[in-house]
Image 1 (cartoon, one colour):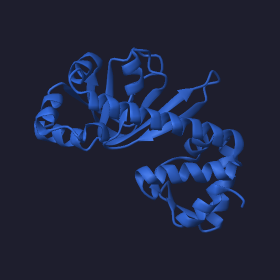
Image 2 (cartoon, rainbow, N blue to C red; image 1 turned 120 degrees about the vertical axis):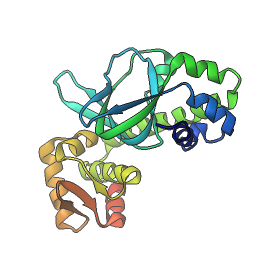
Image 3 (cartoon, rainbow, N blue to C red; image 1 turned 180 degrees about the vertical axis):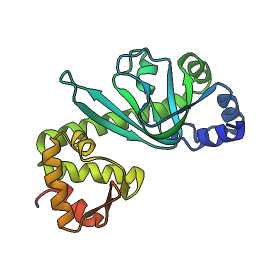
Image 4 (cartoon, rainbow, N blue to C red; image 1 turned 90 degrees about the vertical axis):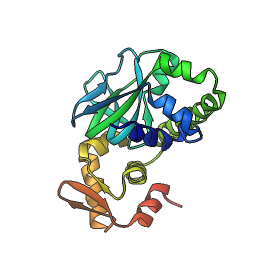
Length: 224
């Protein structure tokens, strides 16, 4: 990847968007380019945190493995988004695994290199705090949703969240949608069939396509 491409990717990342061209160029010098194929892991739950990552292209799903072996998908990240930063900043093992959901290229930044960069740039550190705080609020909201909502609401909310990141065409299996919604595959299949019968979604070549977002949003909000 060319130096100019690294600078562009960093500039499109929210926490770095306010940096000067000189600062972006300096930061790009310590980035490490890595490419992955679908199904590979960038890191595993419990690994030592050597880098955090910014997605140049592709998609990453972050997941936890239960003792039973079941996967629970926590989040998806796409181009311009950052992942793995919490563990790196705390200098604690990664709390979840990052699996490649499509052919992906990332820029990695090592902890020591980034801390050196931050020493004279407190405004970047503040931006990171704001972003991490937002992610914590999202996680707390997600836990409340799983605990208190009907399964139809949870699945509708997950589909809307994915669509906001990836567009209306979602390349996920019923199993993955079930995992993200905290329900069983069988239940997800039944709910998705009802959504399809209601003209809210349709299936095209193994993908779920949202065709009526307003109705899906109403469903996610639950009964009046």
